[in-house]
Amino acid sequence: MKILELERVESGYGAVAVLRQVSLHVNVGEIVTLIGANGAGKSTLLMTLFGQPRAVGGRILLDGVDITQRATHQLAGLGMALVPEGRRIFPGMTVAENLAMGAVSVPEVAAPEVARVLERVLGLFPILDERAGQRAGTLSGGEQQMLAIGRAMMSRPRVLLLDEPSLGLAPLVIQKIFAVLREIAAEGTTLFLVEQNANQALRLANRGYVLVNGEIRMEGSGEALLADPEVRRAYLGGH
Ligand SMILES: Nc1ncnc2c1ncn2[C@@H]1O[C@H](COP(=O)(O)OP(=O)(O)OP(=O)(O)O)[C@@H](O)[C@H]1O
Ligand SMILES: [Mg+2]
Image 1: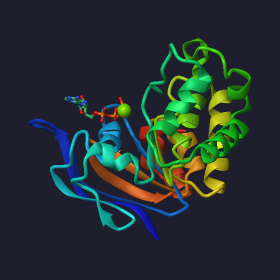
Image 2 (image 1 turned 45 degrees about the vertical axis):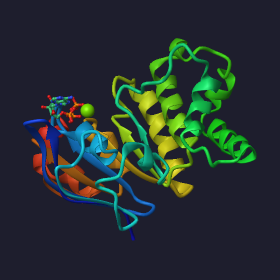
Image 3 (image 1 turned 180 degrees about the vertical axis):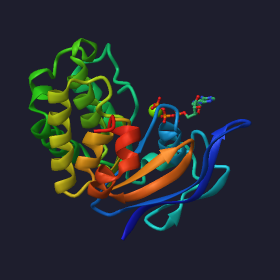
Image 4 (image 1 turned 180 degrees about the horizontal axis):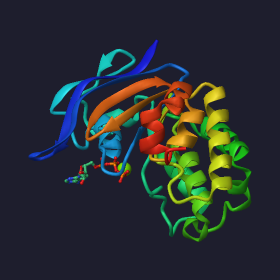
């Protein structure tokens, strides 16, 4: 069953077209990745799901319902959460305050439920528990990424969208974060991540798509794409 589907989606910035007839889907419970080079349109695709920028062509379906024209504030409550590029945590606020902000976007969540979700998030990232009272700006890059993921999980998304979670992080830290993403997926949250780090992303994902200049160039299982000569040459350093 498809949780998220894009049908020939077009979007961009004013006269600048970025996404060209992008069609892809994410099934319930899957981990799907979209890989693409710098400037391919990965972030634009994720932002378009939230209506900023708005799709100017095609359709976006969540649970089979057309959400293409929904207002951005309505979309947060429908079960999608985004971990933005560059993490965008609140550096002057504590770790605990940042996590609490993640629950704010879902006002109908009752207080006991928030406490339960927080416990689960801290279980996934014990370091955030240790650093609960610390200002978020003083965390390492990896810890800030964990906080950004934790904050998104506080809204109990059914589908978690991640924009380059591995960006700028050391290999060991990336492994740790991807292990938690695997755990989050195993517990039933659907994952859609965009990445320049094709190697790690395709290893994690059940399926993947390759975005080139705003167009879907290839799709396949993570394994098939990892083995594809063109993907290897363009995204895996030719090894
Ligand atoms: N706010 C904006 N206004 C105008 N053009 C933009 C804007 N944001 C992005 N673009 C352009 O849209 C294209 C796609 O950018 P986008 O950020 O979606 O790519 P990306 O795949 O996420 O790249 P990266 O890997 O560097 O994050 C680029 O040509 C970029 O210059
Ligand atoms: Mg980007």
